[in-house]
Length: 184
Image (cartoon, rainbow, N blue to C red; front, side, top):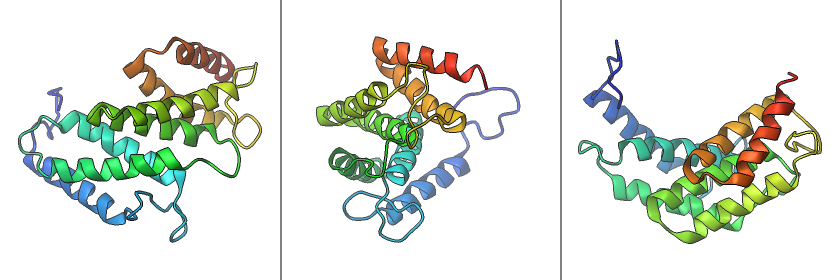
């Protein structure tokens, strides 16, 4: 996508083929309800669904105008399927802010691709849940406490969302997060 020095993959047809193959492989792993498994068969994981949908929608957003990128409508339907599942499911075994942030980011991207408002609304639900559970010290809740590693992981997704929506409350939350993480 970017023509920087020594970028041997700039406008590479083989790279587009690899990316298309990755999208198709991901699609084959998706359950009919839109979810993905993380570690166990049929577990239908919020984390696996969120993480994979986010990264693939990021790639899709970069390549959506590329004429050599085919199967776009098929892949978009798979994103919608994942987003539908994310609108109906939540993390059930604790507050894992990095998982919720990935879900919010995935839903934001699917909203940007489709303009279906319920995905933006569900993204905002996950954001509000994260911010509401953020400590006064600035850490995001992970199984009831702070975790600097997951803090940076979750902040990455939240930062990507902020780049797209410029939400002032999210920016304040990220500023508190950065202050906390500066000690590590």
